[in-house]
Image (cartoon, rainbow, N blue to C red; front, side, top):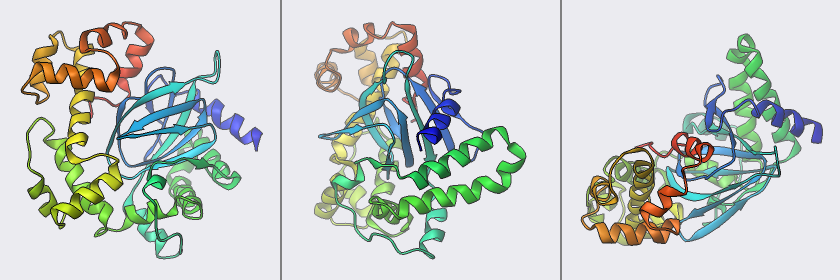
Length: 301
């Protein structure tokens, strides 16, 4: 299987220092050497080389080579990417999740029914069968005439392999249109679209068809954060991007992302990123790190 991993890595080395389209539906790849801060959309993520640490709420997750994890909802996360060594950058591929495809598979397959809170963020080793399916998928980048027919079949196979593994319960939740995950997804999408605005939890709970207490409980179980923390992470991710690429002072950026107090913004920014806004922006004056940050998905609002 090492031969398959090596071939996959060589294919993904074609990626730029950002998430790069492969020409295959819902499939992207990345070759990166800098930060991992972004809003992750629902996806299956396979780490091929290097490692990644992500802070999701109050959890710090570590993702090692030849492992995969699932992102069930739009997820603001901060973290770091670690290369395997000189000339061995972080390499990964992702598949954006389509609930209708997962639901069609579930009609034919019985998998795990439940998922623990921790399972939603953990990585598990990728079995040989999953690696083989991914390799056949990525080879289609060079066979566009075959991709139209074969890519949808291989996508189903990739998802089928995941449904046979420890994270099957996550996929099952994603496919349920009236499940808890779908209910919370409505709230996270609303917060993303209105992240600069203050909000009350009661309307979000009603939007999710839950009591306030149940909404808080399920929101944190799924995202690792409270609704206010989720909004704060969105604001700070956007603020960091603006600090790097907009010629404005920290106070004006604080107000632009929804803060009413510049001092509160600076405190919360430093708590998340380890440095006050101006000093944090200064350390990203290295062109390669800057390039990855601008193109890694931060401005997805």
